[in-house]
Length: 179
Image 1 (cartoon, rainbow, N blue to C red):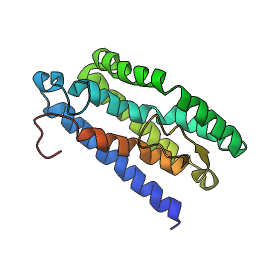
Image 2 (cartoon, rainbow, N blue to C red; image 1 turned 135 degrees about the vertical axis):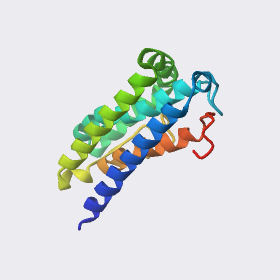
Image 3 (cartoon, rainbow, N blue to C red; image 1 turned 30 degrees about the horizontal axis):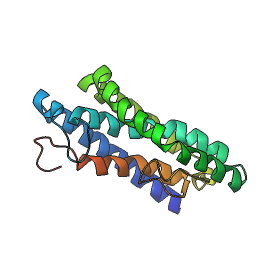
Image 4 (spheres, rainbow, N blue to C red; image 1 turned 30 degrees about the vertical axis):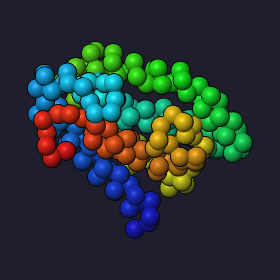
């Protein structure tokens, strides 16, 4: 079995673990839990749950960008990453306001449905990934997210969402004691 096949299997398992955890968090939270502020953010639990979902939703457009910039000379990708880093303040505003509105629009049930859909998409896309593309890489805007590295591969990108999920899961203030 190749290294990327092992990585794929581990990523598939991570996606399923996150899906199970997300649904458990949604199912076990009451309305008061969802309205409670989180630890270390300005969001409520419901808004942070949306933000955690959004980390997975972003993988699709990020994969498209990686497929484009990963095939261009590295300097082009570095320039794009610098441009995005320069826009960090605007990104931070959108990154905050998106979950405020998104959580309200989707609600508990909609977030659960969206999580299932995005995970199913990621499973299909990951399964269809060509071996040659699995190591394709591009520079990333490291000021946007602590889990973005200077250069990320397709494999890194698939794993990013679960690292992001796990980090924010620890900030939830739900009654679930064994998070």
